[in-house]
Image (cartoon, rainbow, N blue to C red; front, side):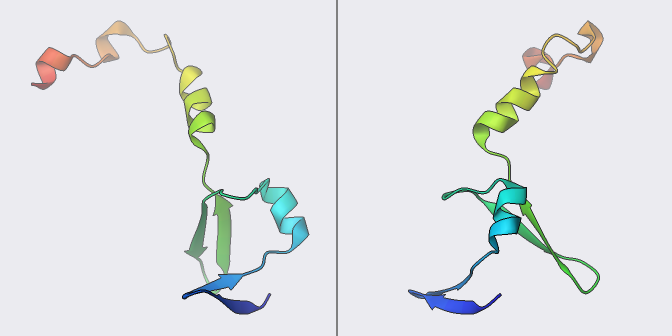
Length: 73
């Protein structure tokens, strides 16, 4: 991959195989994490994906585990 100047930023073009594997599209946010001599690339989930994941837990917590707004204050 080649680093290029894009306005006042530096940019890297990702290979098409990686873009497909990560299911990236324009506007997505990604994380770059430095590992042991490597850089890991991961796609941050979108708001709709986060909500979809949270819906799986709806109604599955025991009543004792629920948060009370009054107890918090």
